[in-house]
Length: 180
Figure 1 (cartoon, rainbow, N blue to C red):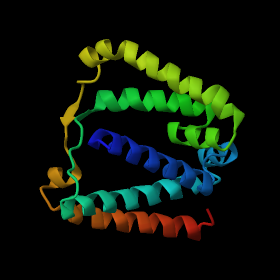
Figure 2 (figure 1 turned 180 degrees about the vertical axis):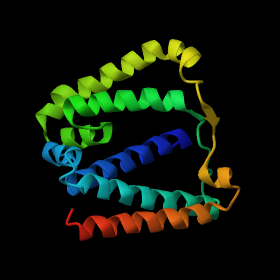
Figure 3 (figure 1 turned 60 degrees about the horizontal axis):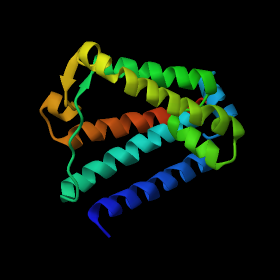
Figure 4 (figure 1 turned 120 degrees about the vertical axis):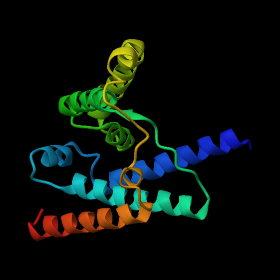
């Protein structure tokens, strides 16, 4: 098996595991997503905070061990604005994000298949068509490069990760205490 094939297989396996965990967590259900948007059900926030904590520790531990490298992509306020608008429009229209659409399709939800998948394909096609124009006029606005918080503060990664984990733990505590 070539390195490229192995990488694709690993990506597929991680994607399936991610979808399985989203489904098991309940965030592939429309009512859970709407409950989050109405600030009545914080299941989505809890799952995302867990993913941020595990992902952050995991990628930095792998980097520390020398098993992977970490090279963030360049960012800009323009890129974030366009990405946020595309994500927000899709989310507002259907109540799913790309990851939850895939999980909902796997769970058999027809609305995700009939509305979500075509929406992802249409949004991707529109972005691809508009990309040269956006690249020249929007994506470069507010360019901040490949800046990360440890680079910004000129400190060790773990000195940023530790407070982040403490903040996440505090948020979990507050959500549970509030019965959310």
